[in-house]
Image 1 (cartoon, rainbow, N blue to C red):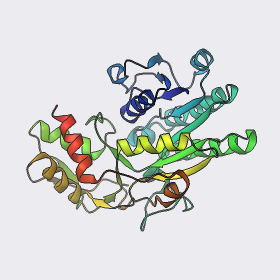
Image 2 (cartoon, helix red, strand yellow):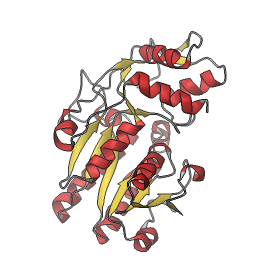
Image 3 (spheres, rainbow, N blue to C red):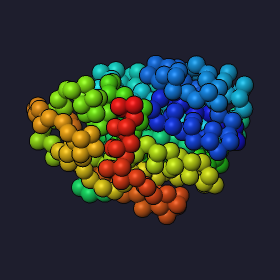
Length: 300
């Protein structure tokens, strides 16, 4: 298979590139390197430094069979401050990728965000639940999902959307819109003190990056389109997470506490039974194992 990975120099994307190369695919990375890093791209892949809003030259040169669309403006704070920029990257960029893929008959797997799409949850939330994004980032990702679904109906394509939980693992860096695992471990590696906002009882669904990669490959093999949650269906509080990180790292100080951040979700957890049923996918790594592997990378 000849594949393009947008955002393939980033955290999740670089792991997807590695997995595709391992199974023998021809892999091309489309990344503007605004947040991605050239050194993350494996030597067996071809890097094309380009913007997803202008993908045609890359697509025409590569003529892909598949597109793994991970590139996005992913900073919630930026989306609030600059919603036009967020929409330009995440909505217009996705439309341009859709049209470039259509011209070459390529299948798309698109990564969206479960937490950003659903808003507050009162338990594991299914794909049919009401979608109530609380920031422009979530709205722009939801727009991308709807464009994929429209192209499936209009053009008979079989594009798949994956709504990801809170992804963590090696190569996630502790700055920008980084996940809390990367932030906490980055501080501990530098003898710093992690800060917990609010009472620490807010919950998230933490899913290890290798499990996310497995879900992307499973979606790529699916003959039909669809939307699937990718998480663990397990709620973990920030306090519980920090306790698990201290266990994985062999110690760490008591955390500092700061006032709760305005608009932060209190509960976010995904029902992943549809992915198990339709994609044959289930998360394989426990939180403890995933944190241990991540700490090993941080300290290597």
